[in-house]
Image (cartoon, rainbow, N blue to C red; front, side, top):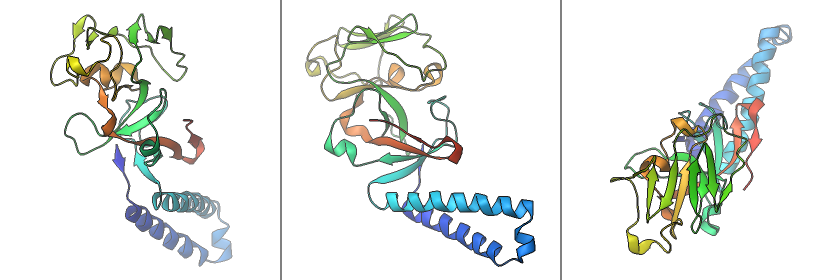
Length: 230
């Protein structure tokens, strides 16, 4: 996913303000025309949202743009999110949160997935359901159940009966406190589009140090404005 810097937001907002001022200088009759009125209202909405983004990005949050469908239907392509980059410096990620992180591969873009299992959890996927500590998760946000089985056991992760191999991130055996539980300092991440997501069932566990921030708010498009609970 792509992140937007405060400077990029400011430049975009400045361009929109210029356009809005140009409209305001047109004759009153022209401004009342249906097309011009629609453009004016759209610009007003975007400028207000842009101002909010600029204020927040100057302090603790950054906007991120969604380029892929791995989190559908929760997050759609072209959604813009505000991500809190301070929260995870103060506390550990929690199960169910939508988090931005540096991917395990050496890539320039950050990724976004849902935290499914945290240190000390047991984890199993069978018959289309995800079980954490022996209980099936209630996941109303899924469009389709996973079409694979998975288990954390014997100090590794097996998918459809086969253990993940390098370059998947599997900590060495001494790093596991119990071979059937997520080890300390690691997390299991999944996309909500379970069967079309490059996530922990492919590349293994995510180190705690890789987290960038927690998703706070979807700010675009305006009709899908939404807060995400921690």
